Image 1: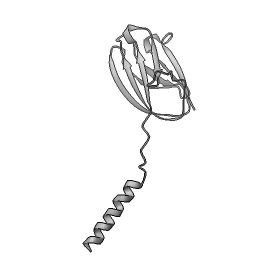
Image 2: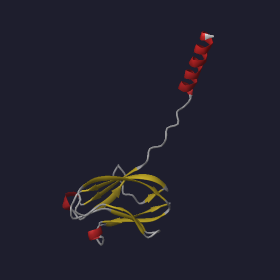
Image 3: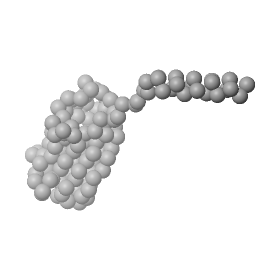
Image 4: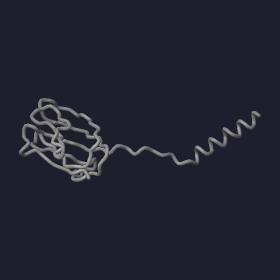
Amino acid sequence: MKRFGLLIAGAAAAVALLTPSVARPAVPVLVAKSGFHGAFKITLTFPDGRKVRTLPAGTYKFVVHDYSKAHNFALGSQTQNKRIFTTDIPWVGTRTYTLKLVPGSYAYACSAHFQTMNGRFVVR
């Protein structure tokens, strides 16, 4: 009986090794930067530096680097006419937000300088 139990355990281990693991896909990362070196510049990019213009609907991790006390990073849904998140203007640092984006138009800006520091993207 002991040998039969070992045989079953060995077969289960072999099946586990042969069965492909189903890894959960990583949450895509988007990188936001505001006021780098005091510049009046705001960006939202993929980690490789490409500008975000369109995204498929889904969950994303926003890593927001706020480099200047004079600027911030605010994200809003133009479709739903609501602010999603914002960093504070006197604050400097990095924050991470994980969001589920639904189809629509989105905009980001520095609240204090929204006329010149802004951008947009679309979720499909």
